[in-house]
Image (cartoon, rainbow, N blue to C red; front, side, top):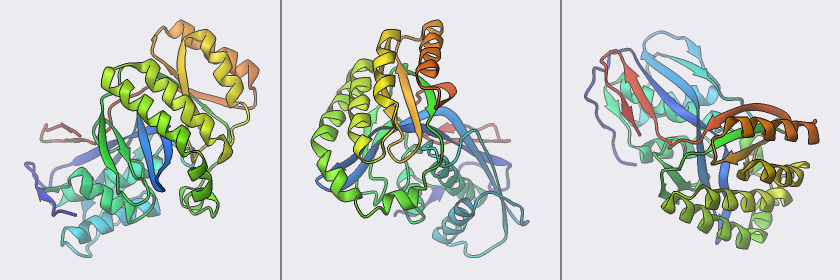
Length: 307
């Protein structure tokens, strides 16, 4: 990692950092045995504030650990701090809730001492804690969520609305990535994953939501051998009638997104009702917009920075 750099603002200012969550991933798998995902950031956010002094820890254990490791990385060492997290994201669903919390906490801790971190520095700290989604990188990225060996910018998404459904339960990221059969299963689906990556890459390059949707659907179906979602084929069949360009899933979580490039919300609502009728066992959560990733820094000094 490279050392953090000085920040323009005052380290004493009241500063908070927002990180987007995700609706699963557009693609996830391995290439030649190397883990990766393609991010699917959405306009649901985690907000983290870190202040030096005090002992108020309104945050999870991993988030607190992220602050400690950031301060240690910056050479601050052990000192009391307070950290507060407010989040729109559900945990254990594949919405990058932990990744959003941790990445925002890293930057908020740096800001508390008058520094900022690069996205690569945040990635290195986050990955030292657990497998991490790359939602804190600007745009849509291809990112090795286990070791960080792949960090590739792919582009900015075209306008896409995502209707999010939840199949229920929770998936622990550490346990999932520690499965003994995961490498073999990922290897078996690599040919389909490579096709999915190329479709999404071209879709982002051309601003073509249909290509992105096609690639995401291919990856979602390929992942049925690893974490099956029983009603997924039926959902794919239904949504074509309502103008959806495809579906994506949380490859290590429980949510499914239905992707719409035609932002006709009357038609989207009709599609949601059709899915709820055909698959009553799943829960509709909300409809969101796909966004470019990246952290948002705000404070009382009136300064705001994206990515």
